[in-house]
Image 1 (cartoon, rainbow, N blue to C red):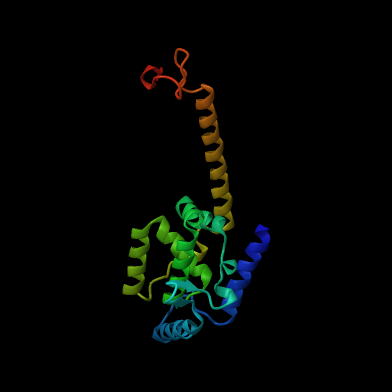
Image 2 (tube, one colour):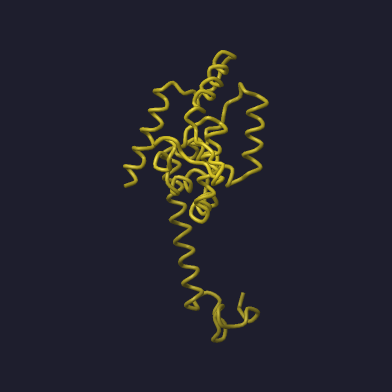
Length: 198
């Protein structure tokens, strides 16, 4: 299942690259920057649309729908637990924010999702990065769509997550069983906190 989703994300990215998009490239001069601007404005013709009656954004083609992006696990790897839980708890709000970002910036779904995940993880740093990119267009653009997606980083993140889960499980079950914090017949859940032998 995960391989199929990764393959679909790679297919979307490769199809965007093969169409000549410059979303992931650094503009080296004014001609390239002008091309990038014109590409973004022409792609707005197929950008998500806003329905004034329902006050919601909606996708106009398959490349803009959630299936063209990555799943919540992709958010977890790219930006951590905050965007992951936001996608689970506020799925509709997240989807509307992604569609609005796609329409405003003229970018593909994966780039919009990466930016929304970065925003949810740390809004101040994301806003600062965007202001710096606007002040210095020749400066390297941060690629939030592929942040933390190098194979070594995925392995490291997975290993750390496993360690944290094992220790958290041991702590919760140990406290519940009375292995940690047991004092004179009382455990942490049923006794007095101040009688514990720490």
